[in-house]
Image (cartoon, rainbow, N blue to C red; front, side, top):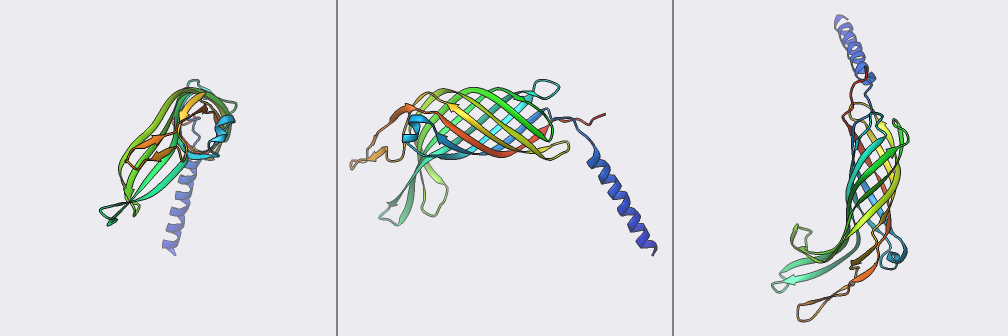
Amino acid sequence: MGNARWWMALGVGFALFTGGIQAQEYSEPRALVGLSFVAGNPLGDLGTFFDEGFGAQLEGSWAMTDDRRLRLRADLGGLVYGRERLGLCLSSCRIGVDLTTTNNIFFGGFGPEYAFATGAFEPYVFGTMGVSYFATISSLSGADESDDYFDTTNYSDVVMAWKLGGGARVRVHRGKHPVSLDFGVERHQNGIANFLTEGDILDNPDSTVTLFPNRSEANLMTFRFGVSVGFGGRLRD
């Protein structure tokens, strides 16, 4: 009976202790770091070359004001809008390899972000300036899905770009490092770019290749869903 009372008292003390920790209130975080899944839809003339693309984006922001509403934002991401795979043979087909070609758009930029509110629900807008890198890359790997052995950039173009977007962070975990779900939509204004799509590389019988690049407006919309984590929060007095 005595042991039971001792364990009960220990359990109550632990509950009170953990409850006290959970009840601690932290200020809004100074920095936010997030990782998002990205789906892209081409706009205007770009839609005649491909239908959609998918990728990922890393974003971060740093509060420049005490109320945490005005932030300096930076992001870096990419998406794949085309993919071709060709099986090849080496040494009379005793060794099978795969030649994979992907059409990619990599992008990055920085600029201001403003949150209309902070806390559990945080809607925000932002604008960034940076670059977009259009690159078609071929890589050689084992037919059994082993690592890439060689890769070559077949064609590329770099353009200055700006991005205008908005979204909302919905907090799902409080504490020193709060966690939020992050939803957003962004317009990428890339202007005119040169790029390849599926079928724009012709392999010639003499082992050379012929490229058929496209030149077009290259603007697109991206839709994000991800998670952000806060850093730099302090215990409230």
